[in-house]
Structures are given as structure tokens and as C-alpha cells.
Image (cartoon, rainbow, N blue to C red; front, side):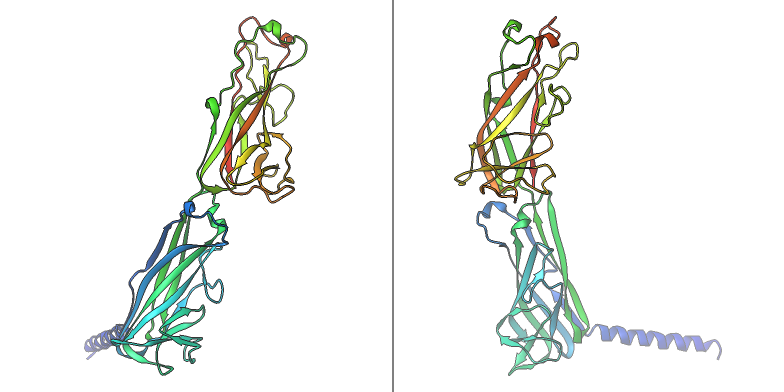
Length: 378
């Protein structure tokens, strides 16, 4: 008898597990799509100023089947943004619309349930699914039991305007839970959307080359700096969509500018004796620039990396190595730049040569200044 007891106990345990597994298999909840991907947000189609932009619509079907007649109520659990939308990260939202309810092969109305077991707050063939509510098949205002219930869902998602102005490629991933509490079944539904930063290309005429030709030493000032004739270049920035950006210029001859440590002065390199040859400035006058359909442009700058902006002005300003320079259409604005797709204008290059007595003229001195204009996406 002693050896038989464990055998009977094991058999009883196996029977118990089989019974539990059979109970768990009585209902199945399925989604036709478990991941709804809205793809890459196209900025090219977004020329309006609407605060919310539709990412698109996606459809899926939900099917609940049970071996025995069961309460078919479905609830969607996710973080709410409003009474009618769920949160799609801090810059987006989405809603659900339920339609085409079918219970055990028969079309039925749908009811919007404030909570499990409560009477419906709304009834219809098509319903906007409110956050915190459930959807159930109805007849004469009463929630029906059934073995098979299916419903079609249309999910619409929106992004606010800030989603367009990302500095780096960004992916939104959120998830909600489709829950059938009376059937003890749930399934995860995931949403995804991707956003790419704007791509802007700067260009300078003549390949960005300013050529002063050959200058005889006797034509230059021996004791004082020699100001050279102002040169101009056409400058443009073209983006694949409106983008908020600022400009910087990096000195490729850093440390060779005469005249101290001014961040707007760029070096002309050094001679054979390591003497500084001079400096140049690249000046922007807002009156010389146009952008998209803006009637007037004003310049605004930031010494804090875009955290704060100067009062927008029509005064010209030299481009700097550390302070952001940008454009807006509002005089006096401190909100920073507006979004621009195509910017074009003329930049002025002013050059100063060091006194000839401060240079090594035993060989030719080559003016060799170089700077790189950078676009900073905001």
C-alpha cells in the first residue's frame, strides 16, 4: 500500500491539471493585427499649420470565441490622453472606432459600457470607443451572451506639430491591452510610428571661394591693418520640408585670427614664421534674405544653445562660431526662428590683413582662410 499511494496522488494531480487546462482553453481572443505601423511620417505633405496632423488610419478585427455562452464585453486598457483618445507618447494620440459587430453569426448593435455590468451609455452600429469604457454586443439595450463575437476596429492616430521638428530619427512605440474580463483573456496591441529629422542643404556660390588675387606688398599698409574690398557670395539653405534651424560657422584656421578672441572673427592662417596673416568676417543682413512666402525676415540669435533668443531685429550681424544665428518673420520676437524650407540671400565677406611689418615677406604669403557653415536643427 505504501508504494501505491504516490501513484494515486500523481494520478489525481494530473487529472486536476488536465481539468484546469481544459477550463483555460474554453475561450480564445484573437486580433487580426497585433502591431499597427504608421510608417515614416511624411513632412512633405505638411504645409499647413494645423496643431494636430493625421498619421493615418489602420483597421483590425477582434474575435472572441468561447465553448459556452459567455459575456462578450471587451475593454481596452491603455493610457488615456483625453476622454476620446489614448496617448501616443507625449506628442501624439489615437482613438478607436468600433463597428460591424457580429454575435454567433448575427449582426448586432454595440453598446458603450462605462464599466463591467453597467448599462450602456451609448448604443449604435458604429461607436467611438471612449477611454475607460467597454464594448459589448446588445439586443434591446441588454448585453448578450454568446459563443462567438467579432467586431471591426478603425484606429486613427495624430501627431502634434512638434513631432515634425525632431533632431534625430525617432520611433514611437506604445502598447495597449485588449481585455475580455469575463472570458479571462487579453491580447496586446502595439502601435508604431517613425519620424525623421528634416534634411537641409546649405550652398554658397562659386563653391564658397573668395579670391583676392595677387596683392603686391607695397599696396598694403606697413604699420596698420589693411581693410580689403568687401566680397559677396550667394548663400542658400534648401530643406526637404519646413524646418526650424540656426546657423554657426566653424573656423577651420582656429587660433590664427588677428584682433583677439572675437567669435565672429575667422583666421587667415599663418605665414612661414607663424605670424597671423589677418582675419575675416561673414556678415548677414536680413534685408538681403528671403524665405518661402515670408514678406520680411529678421535675424535672431542665441548665446545659450537655443534656450533663449534675442529680440528679433533687422540689424545685420556677423555669423559666429558659438552663438546661433537664425531667422524669424516677427520683429521683436524672442521665440526663436520660424520653420523655413527655402532660404536665399547674399552674405558679405569683410577681410583685414595684418600690418606688412608684422609678416614674414621673405616668401609669398598665402591668404588661406577657411570656415564651415553648419546647420543646427532645433
